[in-house]
Image 1 (cartoon, rainbow, N blue to C red):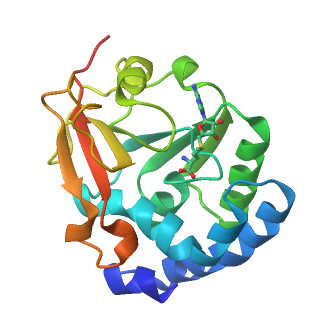
Image 2: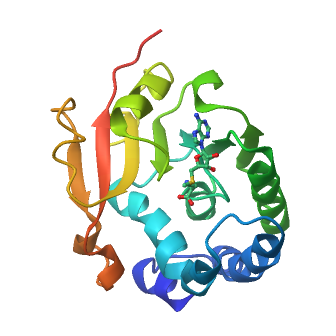
Length: 209
Ligand SMILES: C[S@@+](CC[C@H](N)C(=O)[O-])C[C@H]1O[C@@H](n2cnc3c(N)ncnc32)[C@H](O)[C@@H]1O
């Protein structure tokens, strides 16, 4: 847990308590429904929580903004971001119902009022969002097809509305169709080896009615 307060120094007592509770909650739920690999539970704070919060280093969310997490699995990156940004509204979706059940239980146990979790395929989600976040779901071509009509018109952040995707490795080929994409290295923010190849990709998307 210390790793989180090292990189995020302004946490309230409530946020610290919520981050602390994650270890127990995921140990409990992961034993019933495998949402993260068993060995990853030991590195939960580095590889799941801090990794998710990499998005916040690239673009902090402002109050009243709306964020969609596509293919959230057990709640990553959506749950850590929802703790960090209690005034942003998060919709976490996944096509597997039992994973959404875990997300709902975790959000309830933490008392997160700003999280809704829905069992639905990304393609069927209705609504408009400032940003669509994700990790480990699909390639950028498909992801853009799923999400391009879900971007809000009103611009409230420094970065243009669109996608903030946690990815790793060499993305040259994957991003060839997205000349406006910008890649941010998480190693610029976090010193742990795990982040050496990890990135946040920002793809601005125009509002489409
Ligand atoms: C590898 S897991 C990643 C989970 C989580 N984002 C993480 O990083 O821990 C991929 C998740 O995407 C979900 N998924 C795949 N295609 C989807 C779609 N079209 N709509 C919603 N969820 C989808 C899967 O059910 C699965 O839970």
